[in-house]
Structures are given as C-alpha cells and as structure tokens.
Length: 413
Image (cartoon, rainbow, N blue to C red; front, side):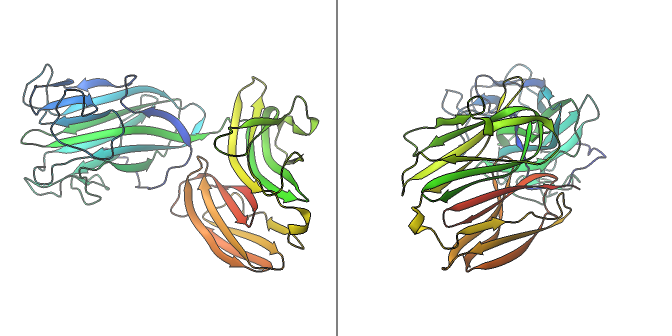
C-alpha cells in the first residue's frame, strides 16, 4: 500500500482549459518505465502498451478504448525482463510555463471484480519543478484483505470508497492546485497475481494559457435586415495585430476566409492594451433563409493564430424580423466573482421565445444550464453559484431564436 503524501487534493469533477499535454499511448508515447519493466510472459501476465489486437493477447477485454492503451496484469511473476510489483511509468518535463488552472484527465479500467487485495493499488502523482510528489488520483479495494475490486480512494487513506472500476474505461478529472515551469507525472500499479489487472488510456494535462494574446468577453452574430452583423468585445489584448473572420455554410463546404485585418481596417487590433474594445463587421454577402457559421481568430505580432469558438446564425429578411428585435445579455456581475454570479438578459418581441442560458468552459465543454424555457418580452435574472467549480475563465452563452450572445466571466478563488 502506498504512503500518502501530506499535501492532498480535493476531488473536483470539472477541469477547465485547453489541452496542454496528452498521452494516448500511440507510437509516439512519451513515457519511460521507472519501476519494473515493460513486457509480456507470452501467456496472461504483462505490463505493456497494447491495442488488444496486436498479438499481445492480454486476456481481459476492455470496452470504450480507442486505439492503443496501457494495461497490466499479475506483474510480479518474473515472466519478462524487469518484471516487478509495483511497476511504474513516468512522464518528465511537461511544459506548463505561463499556464494556470492546471488539471489532469485520464481513463481507467479494471475487469477484476473479485481479485483485488488490500495490498493492491493504482496511483497517479505529479510534481512541479522537481518538488515533492503529490497524490493526484488513487484506486484501492474497500479495505477487505482479499478478493474485492478497485474503488477510487478519494481521501488517500488507503481504502477505496468512491467510484468502482469495471471493464469499461471511465474518465476521471482532477484539479492541480499549483503551477510552475515544468511538471512530471507518474503512474504506479501494484497488481501482484491471480488475475489482478488494470488499464489506462488518454492521459491529459489541461490548463489556461495566461499568455494568450486576446481575452475575449463577448462574441455574437445577429441577423439584421437580411445581413449578418458580427460583434465582439475584448477585455485586454497583448501584441494583437488584428482579427480574421472565417465563414462556412455547411459541413461539406468547409470554412473560408471572410475578412482579415490586413485588408479591413475595422479588424485591426489595438496592440497591447488593458482597455475594453468592441469590434464589428457586417457580412452582406448572405442569402435569406441560409444558416452560416462564423469563427473569429486573432493574430499576434509573431504571426501566431488563436482561434475562438464558432457561432451560427440563420439569415432573416427584414419583414421576418421580430418588432422590436433585440436580445441583450447584460454584463454579469461581479466579474471576477467568487462564488456567486448574477446574470441578466432582456428579450424583446411580440411572441414567445425559446431561450437558453448556458455555461461553457474555455475548452468549449458544457458546464451547466442556467435557464431553458419560453420567455416573453421582459428582463430575466438568474444566479450561478460556482462553488463546485475551479478558478478560471467561463463563457455564458445566451440563445433565443436565431440570436446568440456570448460573454466571458472569471471565477477567482
């Protein structure tokens, strides 16, 4: 049984941010074996990268795998060079310089439901800038001496009491509460004999790159008089040359460049600034009744391009528009917030609208719905409690009819 590190992590089931690093166990795998050895005894014992269809004949059949993964079973039998219990994989030198709101994501499975002993465990740890190793996620049996199954050990006390592992890959996400320049990750498996097994896949390190050149707080597309008006707001910019707008009409046509800062002065950036700036562009080359998808990108002084989320709008003729036509997502407050945020929006029109107010993280993943229902003309206010979510940037998305508005907010703890 592993010795618990003093610094423990809270279990948080949502990690925000873009993918900083990934290990999918493909041909370009980045791990090194730092305990034991990678191999197979030619029968049913192994500690090896596999796709379960390459002649390794690992025995257990896992579901939910996509290509290669790493698996182990009965790793102490001496059937290959270096065979030992426990065995360990380590990833070194993951670059996290300038990255905040770090998180870990990974898939785990174990088909043994009556073989896991109290001495068996699975453990993922990390360290930053060659500091002390810190527990990230662990799996143990329920404390019974012999023959049970792996459960997540959420408090790192040596006994599992959380989610049970099974033959299907399960995804787990954890928060990493500190940052630095370099991160090391390691996975240790203690699965001795008699059919004790594990499988892992798709390890990710996620985070928010604080060096991104543009902090986008609003991005919307509105059909107006048979045209599409695109508007966006930045809260700050770092060495921003300007913006590129791309447009697609359907999945088959692909995205095409619509306008760029080098030919349209309205798309020129403001260099480096902490002031709020609002931009606008009108797309007149559209067809009434057609739906268009737009993507906004910014370009820094080095020529690096950062793409933002896509939004779609259906073009209406002037006579088809609601009178008056307006959907307004008001500035959420306080912003930054901790932990409660107030979000207000106004719907104007003569008929009921199907209105949705949702929260997404900076990687575009859905977080939760704040409002979903019919609205008549009026102002609506809802509150979002971010107490269960980690610090970082989130996006509030308001949609009603063909109008979509997006606003960025920051949760600071």
